[in-house]
Image (cartoon, rainbow, N blue to C red; front, side):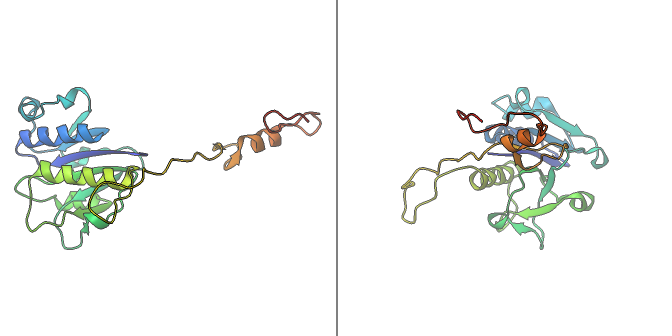
Length: 206
């Protein structure tokens, strides 16, 4: 699966919830996890993080929202019950994304909502636990961006394996003007006209 993702919480009040969330993030392959403000205690988080995810997945704590820093081209996706939120089953996950949840007994701050590139919601009748909500979003990302066999119409497992990925020819992308050209095209065009030899197909001679 291409890209990467991270997940975090703003205004956390129960570190054990973060421990559970970060354990799930580790299981789903998160690149890093983060917290913004709130109460953070690595000791308390470890009580519920039985996989010791802190030793495998980097954790970044930002004391306040102004300190939040994400990699370039990483989309910030808020998870919040709002009137104009996109429902999770209809959401196309960005290739590179950082998902953020609000506190246990509150919502994402207006300032954080303003920074988000997308706001999504899980179609439930009421709010659910932070760790549960985060796990649902991560699972949805996995099944929508991962390469899995199609679900059958009838109950049961897939009737056919997932399609085999087909690799195209190599493409060179660089600032020298060869962008979008195959290796052979780029090399041939770089050889001076007075040279007697040209690059051909493997096994051929010119």
